Image (cartoon, rainbow, N blue to C red; front, side, top):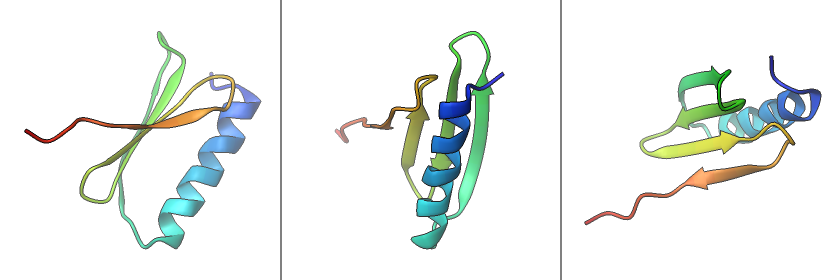
Length: 62
């Protein structure tokens, strides 16, 4: 189950993405890692941790 901080931050991140007119393609909670992953737009991946912090997933193009 997501933490309260994580749930609130997820709402804020999804709101920001929708304000930028980006489609949210994937929304997943991983119970083993206790992380939420959001995939939006063409290549924006965001991981939201149980303490409410989040980060972009960055994979450099080769």
